[in-house]
Length: 292
Ligand code: SAM
Image (cartoon, rainbow, N blue to C red; front, side):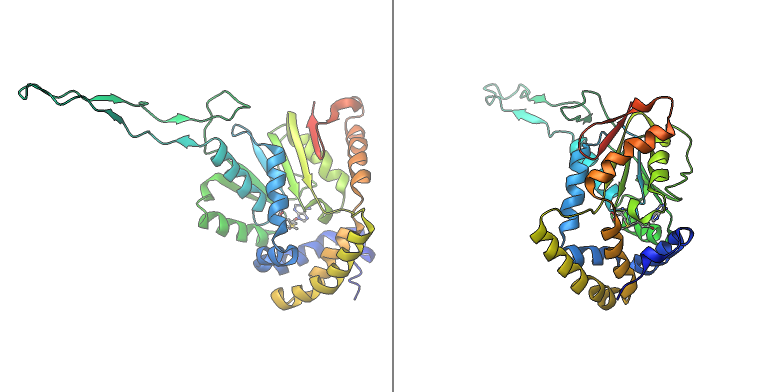
């Protein structure tokens, strides 16, 4: 069955996408695990690993859905910039007093107060409770994210904002890091998303995009095509009672440009955006753009 998403007029795409995510929101996380056999967790961990976040950054995750990327970001910060517990005082034993009338001596050596651990990239002291902003156009996805944040004691550290990646509700140059994971292909104008990312990033800020793309190995591609067509929509029907949304998922992946096409067009969009300074964008590694 063809969902016919490619035949949807441009001005209706967002409405249809919103219907898809409203419908799947409750089952979104469990479906991700089932469809990818848990591998989406590895991709997301890898993504955060590439970023190597710094706890002093102002961070925004766009199309953040139920918060998977934001939670990983905060966990990374906690693991790498954690507050060291006050060490237990070490008692240095002294020989028992020969004269029992004198007071025994105890030497206590300890670090007096809490200290913050910075990793090797930063020498500065850093607050371990760094915050982040998650933006998504769909309130159903955000509500699930809020619940999960509460369950994981992260509620106070994440701001959930309903907004469109193509026109972000922020002033210029607010963020050090912008991520968008499995989000951009759901937007209507990819170029507007990238331009908005550029606008809200500070100078020196980074844009990172995680997205499905084309599989170059023909055998793997065949295996994936068979798997996706045979299993994903039926799984969507059984678990989420929604065949069509998962049909959309595989079609939207198929329609997304190849890795090379996508990464080569980003500087073109940005140079359109900053015509006077076309060299503003420089590749800072695979899938990572640094605003200069
Ligand atoms: N980033 C999350 C993750 O990796 O699990 C969620 C990805 S989910 C596949 C795609 C998300 O993009 C959905 O939550 C959807 O509501 C959101 N989305 C679609 N169009 C959007 C837009 N124009 N602006 C912001 N978010 C959008």
